[in-house]
Image (cartoon, rainbow, N blue to C red; front, side):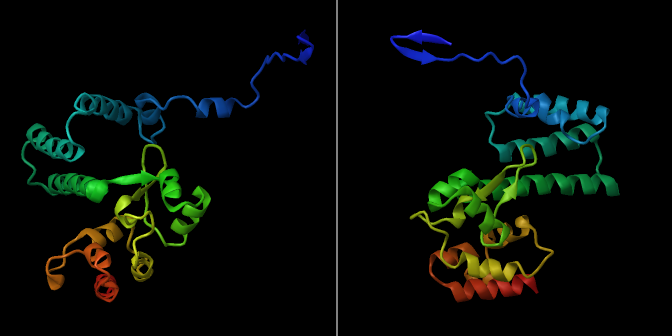
Length: 218
């Protein structure tokens, strides 16, 4: 204890940090840290680390273009991909590229904290809506954080009108994951003049969007 200008203060010395787990959790999540947390054999982690460092040196490229270049590089390095395994590898790479395009569409995504601020509700309330199937979000593989497509919110900071009603139909199909649901909203439909269900909702055409959803889950 010491006293300054009549005010008493106490200084405590901390000899040991009890909650070491918490201290570890706030360390910067470096590339090495994230890769080491992956459940991969050591030789595969080394390969992932090597590839990640190469990709990391080209962050100036758009993610979608990077995915395209990776696909091209894969074909150049492996050679002929006419085998069944080669075709499967190509399909997987195309899927990565398509997913990247989905996540970047219409302004990209926001965190659960950003979604909470946008809707003026708590983060807990946002996650409850997500669990109830009233919002869309995917989980980042690296950090386990939720990412919410921005297009499901309108210009006034509200959930897009009609979105929950359409999600209620899509949620009936348990085979549909978040990718399948996002693809539904963002894919053009010839029967609706090459517009997307998202466009229909923005135009206030809920019944048409619901009909499209009914056909999607059949």
